Image 1 (cartoon, rainbow, N blue to C red):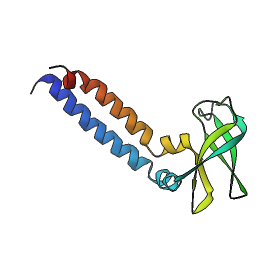
Image 2 (image 1 turned 135 degrees about the horizontal axis):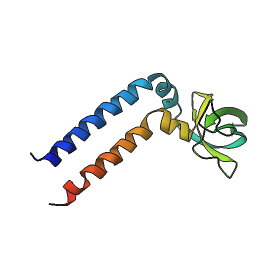
Image 3 (image 1 turned 135 degrees about the vertical axis):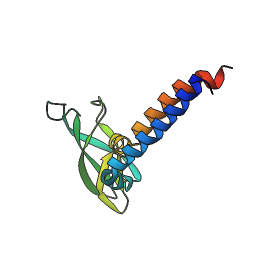
Image 4 (image 1 turned 45 degrees about the vertical axis):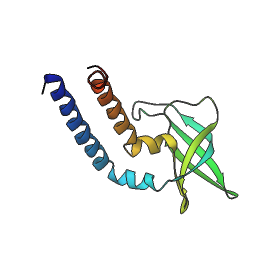
Length: 130
């Protein structure tokens, strides 16, 4: 086994460990967000830019479902130029909702995908170059 093989194996081990830590530390939020399985397009009604205490821009949103209006507050990756945002909601309790962005990052999926991309970039030359 060469040095490069060792780097690939070490990176894979680190990837698995970090993924487990991310999922474990986001346990409560993950459980809450994973209930939000249905998607609807909502309307942004207010925007708060990032500030010293909170580095994530936030938005207030509302959405209609079966003639009922619901609202929530969430983080958004960029301040949208339009007024719509994808909302995930709990079909058993539509008052529970989050933006699609929050779902992606608060459940740990975003970090796991980022680490997977890093791993593929490191392993790519070894996979395709013989």
